[in-house]
Length: 141
Image (cartoon, rainbow, N blue to C red; front, side, top):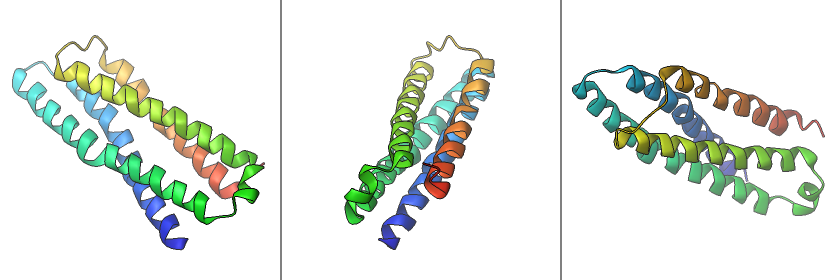
């Protein structure tokens, strides 16, 4: 069980590293004006999304599910903190999906959003991280 917890946390840290960095790349990509820079950003974004973020997200979910299965489901069935955390993870997966959509917009050179939009989107994972960690550690309800 402790191995699942350790691997779950490692995968989560890697996933969040990507969630923090990819929108920052989008900021710079949206500001870039030359073709060489835009092509470089496309490569960086693709490698980050497919090489780090998505595998880390899947590992986070897999090891988290392992923790649920290895633990006593009867204890978790009434744990409001866990249900809230799982709901936030579902929303975070939707955010991950939007990161993929924006990746494709940049790839296809049809991005219509400004660097300011991506600056705001860069803050979204922080809110999720704070809430999820507090729920998992403090278990307020």
